[in-house]
Image (cartoon, rainbow over all chains, first blue to last red):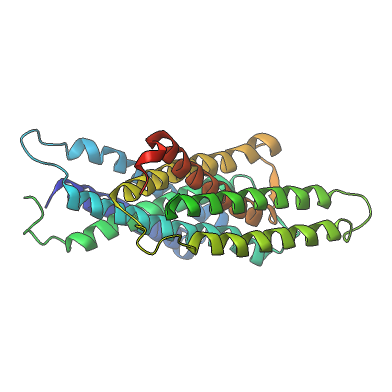
Length: 147
Length: 148
């Protein structure tokens, strides 16, 4: 498994852990504890775990005596970015149109929703990017991946 | 001028026309005289954009020489750099779009939902603009003689 795969796997694990913990926390506080949905949504605080993704370049450092990136790796990364970019437009358009559809054109939303929307889009982008990288390398096939 | 450049000029033209069109509509929203004020101007602009789209598509696909190379490695590299520039521009725009309303309306403020599709389309048009300008600038910096 090469460096790009390790980083993608790490990011995927971090995002999925944060998502599972957030959904579990919201579910437990809403259904089991009986808090209101506004308070239960505080469970999204677990999404802060995604900040660990910033550590991935430090955890998987470039090795001096090894080729860390060749043309194939670059192509894979470029395709992953392109896939993430395509998914981004779908998610971004949905995030802009769904509130308009639910609330109605004359309704209004809090300005605090916009940064949350941006955060959600960013996480989706990272998720797709990591997934596409792992899929292209073949989910851990050891040959050809610059071991 | 190769196909990538023609495409970039076409995208640049469409993006500029759409931005002007959007600005006219936005200005018309606050014009006195009711909801139908300025509809004539909007219709004229729609025709301008339609004609530009039709003419532009024809020009982009028109090849002077059948043996003309469509696409080479340099074009590929130019496109990749342009995608990267558009991607960076996109994040700057999104960051601005999520932060500026907080400054304008305050932390407890709210914005009209109808602004969200406008933000969406606005970001898309500006990203298209950045992409095409990045392509044209790279060809300009690379020199006329080297184009495929």
